[in-house]
Length: 307
Ligand SMILES: *[C@@H]1O[C@H](CO)[C@@H](O)[C@H](O)[C@H]1NC(C)=O
Ligand SMILES: *[C@@H]1O[C@H](CO)[C@@H](O)[C@H](O)[C@H]1NC(C)=O
Ligand SMILES: *[C@@H]1O[C@H](CO)[C@@H](O)[C@H](O)[C@H]1NC(C)=O
Image 1 (cartoon, rainbow, N blue to C red):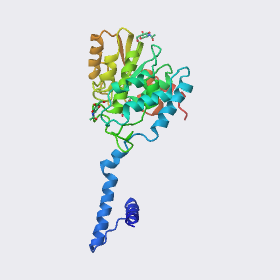
Image 2: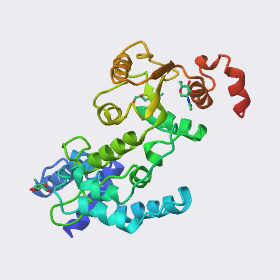
Image 3: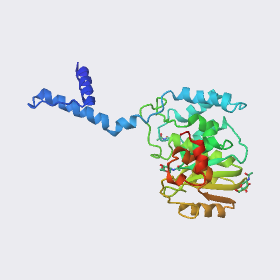
């Protein structure tokens, strides 16, 4: 009965039909309190946080993606998807949600070794959307998301609970704790990816933000330090700004200068390009009316764009 009333109020609140009767009888006060509590529940952070629990059906997603990868995306890999899942589960479940280290994932990574041909490695920071179009067009590039581990865990959230498997209700924020289960996995995956990098590698950075090269990003804190100058021939950096700006950083301005100094001092050969034409064209395809697209590339873009 009480529950039924609550649900009715609940509906009303959603439709904005909250009418509090003028004479405050005890019953109506109770009703108002229920309504207020409900509104608080709707908007309070714990409600939002609850949505950041472990991704539902995580096992089916992860194992399914693994089979998809080893069967269709990259056939020839002989990996045991069930075993990889078991090792993953072993690292995460029944742990406190802030207590999964990169070492805890070592058995899982051991079950999924992978090597890559040289000259294909693409690194990026704060350029995710553009990176996807770039990698799709320049088909020879491979990013972390193209590796088995990246493919399996992309966009998923997970954390354990001390005595009952995964916590599907809420997980801590990504950077809320040092040994966050999601962060630790990506940290180790990024490190492995960078350690394997060889030949010419490409780095896409965002010149429309301050600290395009950020020492706290995955690229700045893990990948850069894991690159091996004896294996990497050239680090080719491409700085890309939004068409509409702001144009805050470039190869000769801001944090990227610091990155070039670090590369130099560690013995890397590098190149740095502002306004790479392919990247510009990709941006112009999405926004062909933009004034910056009236360049020599314009006729090219126009011929691509269906009017
Ligand atoms: C974290 O994990 C370690 C080893 O796995 C364990 O000894 C420690 O008690 C755990 N700490 C918490 C707070 O769960
Ligand atoms: C640069 O970063 C901003 C803020 O994160 C983002 O909105 C923008 O799309 C990024 N630009 C490019 C070219 O990736
Ligand atoms: C590697 O990069 C350098 C500098 O950009 C370039 O001259 C060279 O042709 C590239 N080599 C390959 C194999 O892509």
